[in-house]
Image 1 (cartoon, rainbow, N blue to C red):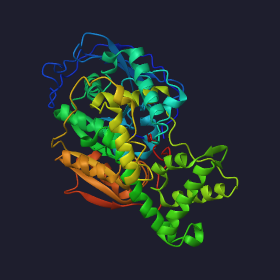
Image 2 (image 1 turned 180 degrees about the horizontal axis):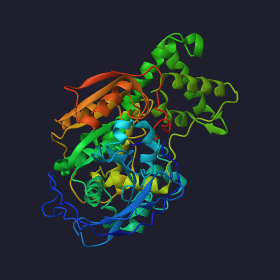
Image 3 (image 1 turned 135 degrees about the horizontal axis):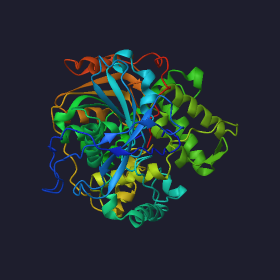
Image 4 (image 1 turned 90 degrees about the vertical axis):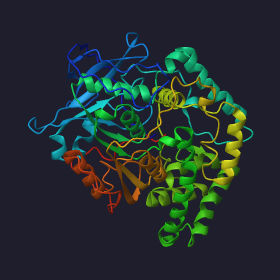
Length: 510
């Protein structure tokens, strides 16, 4: 769950040969009895070479071979592209730190280079930073279903007049993927199998355990790995949490109440600054200013930049607009000017997903868990939530491709363990709201949670949002010491990026 980093697809041509590796522990969350045998790794020797020229020169890349279907370990193989920046002090080296930026459907091969400047020297000297493209993504045997621009656009507000069109559109996504790949092939691209891939990567790297920095969807991937392979977990930092109890439809539906809470906070803040923004002197007046713009755009679309937007299209952007107070006020001021006929800049795109990203988003979301198959149930939910949460409620209760997908190959993973981990969570995160952090914390008895009070945005570590929270994470990565109890950090007055960091972490917004 994530705006996606737009970078060229990579072609990593590195041969994998054989070398000794440790066998893994069996999964503790049992799939269908006998369906997936415990992993027994064929040794692989990784050949590290220069990466694609589009990637930073500091990276070296290799390829790991994994089974398409872990029930048939000798069958068809997939290529998993991985990258590395080696620890700076071999004498202090502890192991490997894998990095996942979120998703599902987002590549991560460039993340070690992107985050290198965000890590302090004490972390860089202890860990090889390992990036990877998950199976089906980027350079790792990518899937593409040949989706049209309309099928790539995931923002679909419910209206009675368009519901049948949306049924046809989402059914088309499922049909195209099934026709191209077949249901059995698609069913192997799941979070459980990606966790198994991480276990193969661990063995190929010759490591007894792995550490992980996982953002957004990466927190769910980390939690699933910890459930399946608890003895292989070293130090896991899970940043901007997905609640395992809600995957996946509930993870999307939670955006609607979170947007309403953010909007209420934003109207109060903006009303207190009426002399600056001119949107109203009370929260109610500020709210009316916004809804008046939406109503006007519904009567006659308004021009924002070079684009004509109706009220429904304006509402689509509320998923991210109101979680950042100042940016939200400036955005609505521009909408007000546009409604008055003035020339204003374009709204920033909500996301920029390509065929591969969208294909893998739905393949994983539909393959991890069973979804309701009756379109009428989606219509009822969308009507209900449009009333409950008028800003965004109808969008993610609307029909989805998973209504027409095949059955998952395995039961959904139940997360319930005491593996030590650190959860980082902004209070005002538009993509993984605070309630998600509490949900993940309830499933991980050995974890501690750090909440950034008044923290805005998606992602904590490396974003400069809280020096306090990053300090706790660095202590955990360096020493293994977790806070004695769940704790709260204050947000920095302004983002404070370490020198050399690549700017705010480009987590995908989906």
